[in-house]
Length: 240
Figure 1 (cartoon, rainbow, N blue to C red):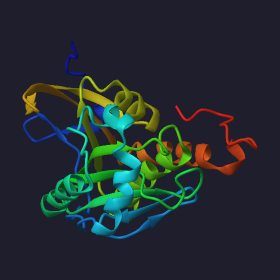
Figure 2 (cartoon, rainbow, N blue to C red):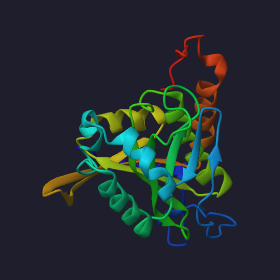
Figure 3 (cartoon, one colour):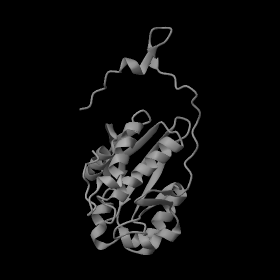
């Protein structure tokens, strides 16, 4: 069981009554909302999701052998109209959704995954990455790592958010491994958080905060450097 951690004295001060209070966030102002813009890197491009992506997403995410990828998100759509309705509904409720398009390898130029920005809190500067779905062309790829890196940089560097969250089904071990690999810190478990497809879901919380980001960013950039890969594309040094 996780226990509350003692506070580092460097992270609080005493008020006039001698009680500990948080440090002042000097010059803080609410942050801009994330926009539906394209973000491009060396290995991947993130495009705001639109109906122009749906047919190719069905081809890359909804094959008979893709059921496992949908286990923690919902039931795999078995027809293009079914996927169309699912994604159209997502855009209506969660408009900041991105299609992930690798620029190398078998799926180059095709949308092969999705993720969405949720819980956008401009006043406090926090945002959540969720509904992460990587197709077979993205798994264990440089493009997948760079996709998350681009979104972290956009939110924490460009927009100046203070906190970037990733909340996941507590039983989703691949996502746990990915979160740790990217540098997220585990924060705890929200028990009985949701009823999903008629089943209980406990939700585990991870985060990266602004103070941690420069070191994590540098580590990700070193890993993404072409010099970190041999002629076959195998990594020379691990990210984690």
